Image 1 (cartoon, rainbow, N blue to C red):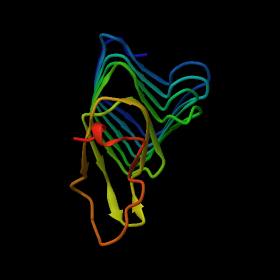
Image 2: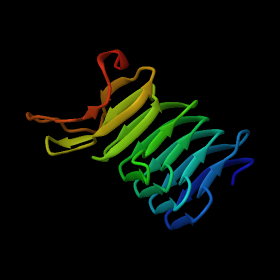
Image 3: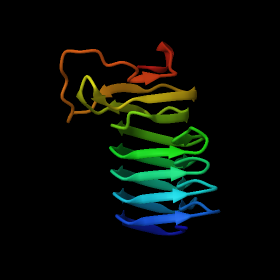
Image 4: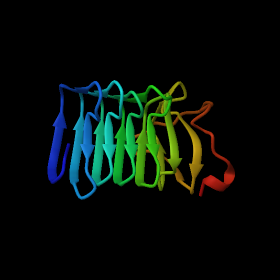
Length: 170
């Protein structure tokens, strides 16, 4: 439960809770950088609950919540997901009333609900190895792009994004 500020928060082990948020960033709190290469989990709540300012999340591990993997009503500047973000409600990231500026994704099963990130970038290694996201109950618009580290090849990239219509993509 962060009520102040962290410059850097690094997890390469396990942060787990049965009935609370595993990480809770309070209204007036700031986390400059959260890096997870381990496990952040909550059985009956959110793995990460942000109502303050979280400048960046770099996830190469597992973020798993009973409610939501990441629940955001505050501001998240950047999420880099090359690991797994999931939950018990089939919504990995729930952004309701908050702002997410950029989401880079390599997970093939990421689910997202709520206000769209300003920028969404798929990370692509090949036509059979790339990030996929399913959006639901969305509002706003997103700029779609391919992450700079990606390797594109001739092929079909099926279901890179689903759940959006043309009015949601700029």
